[in-house]
Length: 171
Image (cartoon, rainbow, N blue to C red; front, side):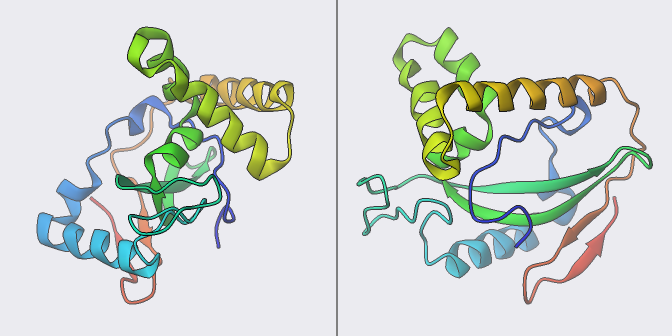
């Protein structure tokens, strides 16, 4: 499995913010992909195993899910390739988007606990201290800064490598 079965801190370059992959693939096809990913995961989070009828490793059920897009980046060719679609609960999604959780926690009083909860998930899954997770975030931010102003070509290779959905798509 690309990237393993744990949330990783993933900061997308600016050119990939709000990437409307579902618009390029098409609504019905995207719905099939979403349903496939959910069914493949048993309608549970692939990281913490929480689901509507199942308490995950953090002792909570999950009712809101995301399909997280996990990319590899080739900085030489400036191509981002979708490697994996991961069915995740909102808590694990915030762990993968730790900076987003940090910003939301800072700006929204009702969401102050998002960053702390996301940090705790990363600490748990990777057996790291809080300072080690913060150092990891700093490294990812430095990598993001090196990519954020790079002009990527209009094409973004997207390989949907899930069983039954193999295809190469290029907008």
